[in-house]
Image (tube, rainbow, N blue to C red):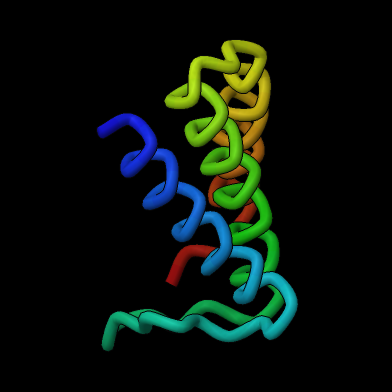
Length: 84
């Protein structure tokens, strides 16, 4: 079961990496108006966080560093994003 959770979080991280390289959302909410730069920044931070979650689920506990740094980066990127 833990391996399945690690695989799912790894796939979410992979989706975020694709969004980093393309600058486009793969799953787009209808109300989203984010620029490609915002998508890249937020997706990169989320990919780092998901990598950490995958490692923690596989009991590699230094993955917590990735989780914390990813979520901190995501909070900073969203804080700097312009309000719409």
